[in-house]
Image 1 (tube, one colour):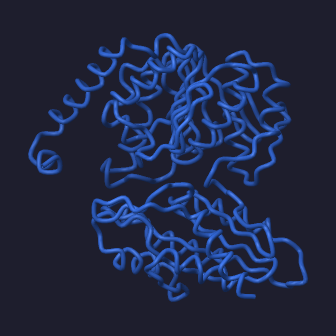
Image 2 (cartoon, one colour; image 1 turned 60 degrees about the vertical axis):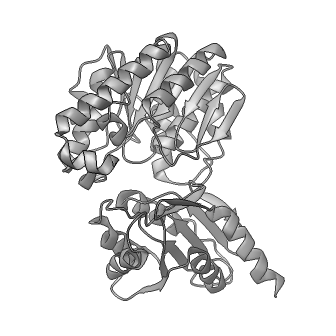
Image 3 (cartoon, one colour; image 1 turned 90 degrees about the vertical axis):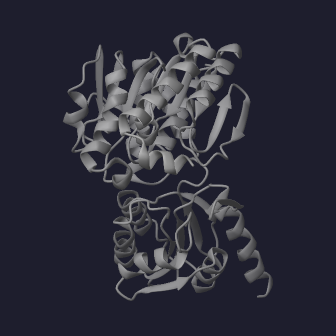
Length: 405
């Protein structure tokens, strides 16, 4: 019924409906964000890790925080896993969450903000003090109609935030976001910006250049909001990463990494990072063995062969499998991803079987990387959420294989 109404109602009617819901949610819960220092993080990649880093810094500084992202909902000491399969939940959920945060005495709230959430006015009537831009790459093109409209949706967070804008100056879209008015504009980058590697001496223990960008974004926010620099550095050095983001599930005799990457930009960065992680062992040519798929439901079909092409470029063995087909034929999706590998891929429908095959192929010193789901707790197929966890399945299949040896 909802999809039917979407097809027949004019876009401005649907937009107004979402706007009214946003207003009602704020009204019912008493506009709770006005009592908090609300930080919104948006971009194509790095949002979750950046929100987690910001939270870790403020908690290190003794501040009570609320955190809402694709992984979890946290208020003070209480937290729960985000099982909604929505990075940015609905308006009533967010307002209720922030109301609870104020009742628990939180000073700060950090929210992961998505383009779809902005399109549906979920950012409205949220009194953001800080807006953070991580990076931008083509994504959700079919949902928004074009890259320009996708970028424009992201910009609306900054138009709604009048106090502080924190921008990745080294992203090619930085100028687009810097043009919006704010009382204070802060930039960061590895080499450029108000906060960079040289003047902050930022160090982290998790791999990947992209994580350095995330750390610098968090550094910029914390320093601008008055957190002492020594505390920021210590919190970032101690930060152990985010579940399902470059998470090392198995360390020996080969590494198994689980990562959420499902966009071409993110996937390429993961593969580039892993090439530099290949350990030196008796194995003269350690391999990278990858397992990947692509989300279905009409979502950005253009990227499927691109994902396959990247896997073939960086990985020695490629296994394409099921991910989240929604209402699409999973074999169709697998075929479109495999097409980009130009014959290099093995196609295995069952995701558990695909992971098992990857583990069997691995030798000492190799790296198995499983992407697309990270710590997500389910696979969505034909309207059903099937319980799932890549990390748990890896451990189960690894144990089965090595019990037989």
